[in-house]
Image (cartoon, rainbow, N blue to C red; front, side, top):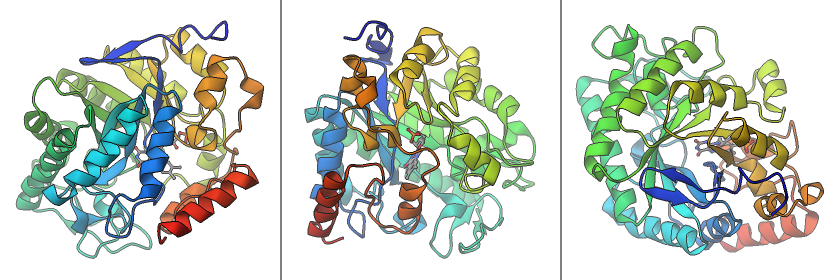
Amino acid sequence: MATGRRNLFSPVKIGSLTLKNRLTMAPLYLAYPDPGGRANPLILSHYSEMARSGVAMVITESILVNFDQAGGNRFLRGDSDRHVDDLRRLAAAIKEGGAVAGCQINHPGRFSRSPGSLAPSPVPVAGLPAPREMTPEDIRNTVRDYAGAALRVKQAGFDLVEIHGGTGYLPVQFLSPRTNQRTDLYGGNFENRTRFPLEVVRAVRQAVGTDYPVGYRFLADEWLPGGFSLPEALKWARILQDEGISYLSVTAGTYESFFIPEIMDLSAKEGFMADLAAAVKREVTVPVIAAGRISSPALAENLIAEGKADLVGLARVLLADPLWPSKAMTGRDGEINHCLPGCAACMQMVMQETPVVCAAWPDERKKAAKKAVSETGN
Ligand SMILES: Cc1cc2nc3c(=O)[nH]c(=O)nc-3n(C[C@H](O)[C@H](O)[C@H](O)COP(=O)(O)O)c2cc1C
């Protein structure tokens, strides 16, 4: 091991699980599943490679709790027992690769591309079908959808489930005063805006049992005027901890802030969400994961050494170079193939549901990836 990487390569516990080091793969949707959401050889070999990279834990891209409320057609599914076998293959690919396997579950709410999308309030998103305000019955059904998907994740053999509470998806839409304009018990003051995500957390916990780890992708700031922001997020972090959430994986921004020029400049910087993770870490004792262009092993090591985070989440960073963990371990930092700052190619591809070929990959790898994509009929 490279000297000075002792913290990064030390074990850590998440609930009952022991992770071999502080490196995790953060969820990264790449539009690899078949239309209709089936797992195919492309996605299985992708997750196998991510797990074999040496990270201690891989959290999958978000899978849908309700396919009718989909952000697109190429999303893995957790909404029916028919999909458990696909999830089982995914969990097995990750575990055989030597990593703890986690699966993220999601409902996109107003970011769904389906007509009849559901949201706390009918606040539209440019270019997408206008959402319908959720009735109390919609809320009950949706909470049940999350619980059903979480149980399927457990049945499929994953070691943990992660609730997607980031990127402006449904839980955030309830938390945010910008998108939650309800006047019933689910809107208005902070307590009411937390009611829906809290019901989701409790239903998921009940579905999977007390010993099964439940993580939470946590939004620290929407980075939008009038949006959900850090002071309330810190209160929310403490509530999640009290509810028995096993870790908080900290992010910021939503699809409505990602393309604002100042946010694009900010998110081109190394460690652009690390300070928010550190702010959350000061509030809670559960493990905190920091993500966001943690491109150099030195930064990753410092975040752990300085107590700003317990783990680091690598998404595009790991995709661009699956050898990142082994290069970091052996001090070959100069050989790392970096995700290109300012490059939004993968984000643009997934928005068009085009399977991602990373712009930072060497030409040979790009060629092989394009071949693999075409062989799966994509
Ligand atoms: C194309 C793309 C897809 C993503 N998919 C997910 C996802 O499914 N769930 C999630 O919580 N975050 C998702 N993220 C956010 C990443 O997990 C991560 O927080 C972010 O990309 C910053 O880390 P990085 O610089 O290592 O990529 C995605 C990001 C990108 C660019």
